[in-house]
Amino acid sequence: MNARDRRPQPREGATDPGYRPSDPGYRPPDLDHRPSGPGYRPPDLDHRPPGPGYRAPDPGYRPPGPGRRPPDPGHRPPGAGQGRTETATADPLRAAHAHCQALQDALVSLREHGLEQVAQWGRHLAATLPVGGRLLAAGNGGSAAQAQHLTAELVGRYQRERPAYSAIALHADTSSLTAIGNDYGFEELYARQVAAHGRPGDVLLLMSTSGRSPNLLAAADTGRAAGLRVWAMTGPRPNPLAFRADEALCIGSGSTATVQESHLVALHLLCETFDHESRASEDAPLDGAGAGDGAVDGALDGAVDAPPAGPVVPPAGPVVPVDGAAVPYPYPSPSRSQAAPTSPSTDRPADHPPPDRPPPDRPFP
Image (cartoon, rainbow, N blue to C red; front, side, top):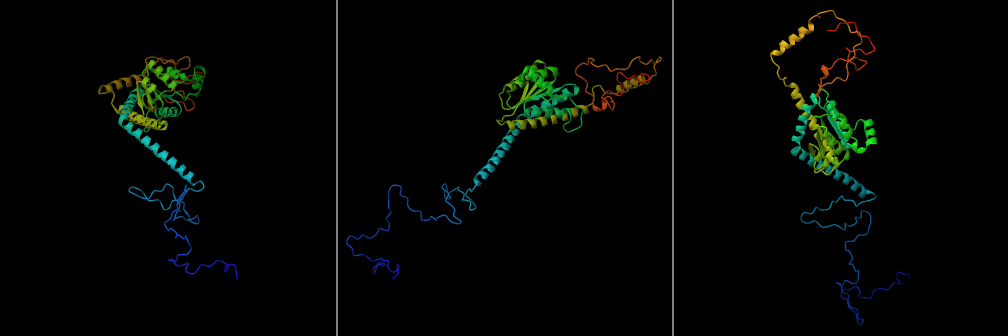
């Protein structure tokens, strides 16, 4: 007889549901009985032990109800590094959307409240620079780069071909910048250059996202004292630079990047207006032009073509152009086609030989 056969066998009739043992004190089991006690937790009837394809229940899961979305059947719980990757990807996208939204809001505000001021600045430059005025621009960091961006558009060109105009970015002269900073301190960095280059009637444009840079505040004070028109591009009002400038364009955003990007748009709009207004002034006829001009031109032609009254005596010495002659402000600003021809090897006009070279043997008209 093996071990299996030695196990106790059920008594006869024990498998009968209606069977009741005859032992004294027998109590039938309570099928609805639930044990209780401290920390007792009833068993989960749907519990499945971990295995292939096992998915742990979500502790925060709530069954679908009104307005609730059912869970994603393709959801996978975070594995090794999976949660960190999804979070890192989501955060830059969220930040990019927030950045674009902030820029969009700032441009909407600029379009509604700042376009007229930018256009007025462009018209003022179009009336000042072609007659010899000058634009001085300054800033710190990214604002310095944008100030130089504006001067490059004016010295070079924005869209159309036009004459070059005087515009100076004060931070671009590194030798002067370091000398002034070393001798006078950072606060005088731009003020001393404004005193050197600025003339009454010129324009000083100062750019600052905070509006609180000491060197720009000192430059604004120096510019106004010297008779320059001071403009400021800043961040939100109120700020000291906007208060000290004659006019200010303030971008109401707390983000430095958004303020700088809005300033760049404003600079391009300024150049757009400048090009439009300067072209209109170039195309307009000069005052007093009429039938009498032909007579004046004929008289001048006759005076030039007339032979000299007496013998022509060439000068004894070389012809040297006179430098430093007093020229009244505003200075003339000839176009590229009106400029005197220059020698291909030097910047000296072709009809003026160098001082150490004898003059050509030709009469003077």
